Image 1 (cartoon, rainbow, N blue to C red):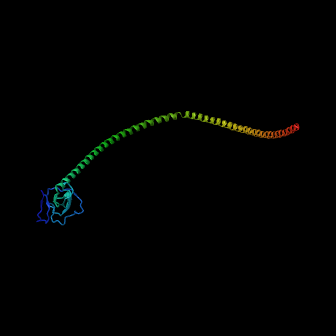
Image 2 (spheres, rainbow, N blue to C red):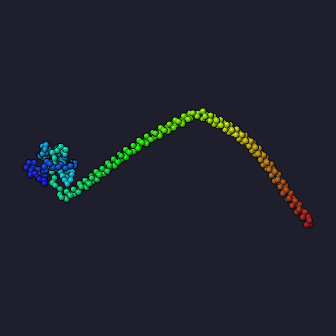
Image 3 (spheres, helix red, strand yellow):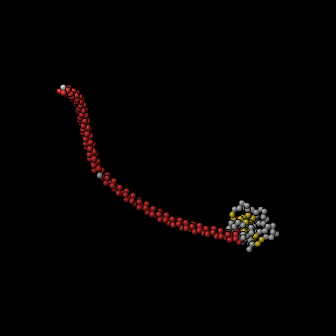
Length: 249
């Protein structure tokens, strides 16, 4: 259990532990930090001024204490508490919080382990994929090499048959020339046919215009004849009326 100073040597009441006590982890507190210049005691190991700290570990989280000036690495261990122990309810709450924190840490560690295992599996899969890729490259190179040989053989055969190909090409060109001549001849005949059809169409057009003019003239003559006929009918009607009048007398 902790003990308290009676103030005879330091003038303050502190909860003191032995040099073997554990120094808890700390957190930053802007109201309590730096060297404890106002505290006359020195650390037990180095006889150096003490450093102000605030615990951030377990059921003592939040309690102020003094620690060796050299810190956690080279210090002469925990020196003394300033704040008294927390009430039991506070300790239980802190214990539960740190338990939850540790469980979360354990879960994260487990997750990291699973992630590292997954990374290992991925590395193995990558290695297999690299080997498979190397095999594919080798097979592809082999395929291209064999294909190149076949292409070279085909080129040799083509070179050997170059004369035959030239002869076939000449025949093909000659055939094209003949087709061009036939096309030119057919095109000329088509042009002549168009010209002939144009002349015939022009003659038919002129004949149709002449016939149309003749029909118009004939129509005029018929109109004149009808007019004369109607005049004659009217004259005859007048003559008949006069004859009838004479007969009636």
